[in-house]
Image (cartoon, rainbow, N blue to C red; front, side, top):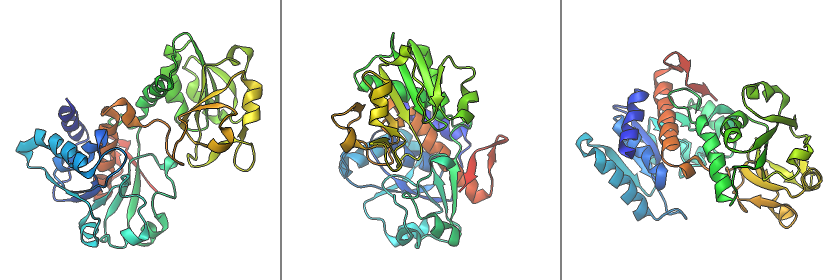
Length: 346
């Protein structure tokens, strides 16, 4: 089943990397698909890996090569490497911003050849300075392009609502017959609301005023312009507050000082028993502990509290295939696919 979806993604995007060298990662679970996608599109792939809490190097190799075995007639060219050498970096036409490769510093990128490109597996507005040395890229002709995740042939944003449901269930909560509040300041909001509004009793949304129009056809109640919370009596006992704010590596909830625009005291004043579902955006965990309930209890700074891989292979196949397509198009000097913009130069 997974191998069929990988093949379908390559065909859908007309992904063609023949004669190209791709440097990416090899990882466990859904992320095992990345080197397979690139190799199936014809690339010579170097996939860097290391042991993590998700699996050992041997486990990574087994998962990737077991998946590759489904395409044994294609002679996929995949080398899983444990050392990122200057020689391998120098061969790459496409260097992805995969987790094991990050941060892509000048010390790594100085070995890249002229004309190499760097596709980001996320949208332009989501980029983080900690991920790569963008100034070095610009000064040395390494073109960086972000992926339009909303392109109909990628369509990753449509999984955001499913991810919210997964987080609700993981927190031990239930959407049915319960009220929820979505607090958001970015483009995720309407995609989460579209799904959640159909399965919970009612949904209130606090978002930026300029985003309000995006909710016009979704059954929600407006609860103020971010970060103000105009919570009516109906939502005082909301089952949870789904919180997503960008920049993701900024602390948004805490004592209410510095960058924190929503204080614990404010939440306790407008909700009877606030429970924060940390979809994306940092909170001051140390300050919040014991004062309000939140889930998950720990999220690394800048990371989402629920990942696309938590709901299966589908969004990861689409996202990674889309990012690789961005790499192909950067090399070819293209920006549109089927008449629609698929990438944005950073």
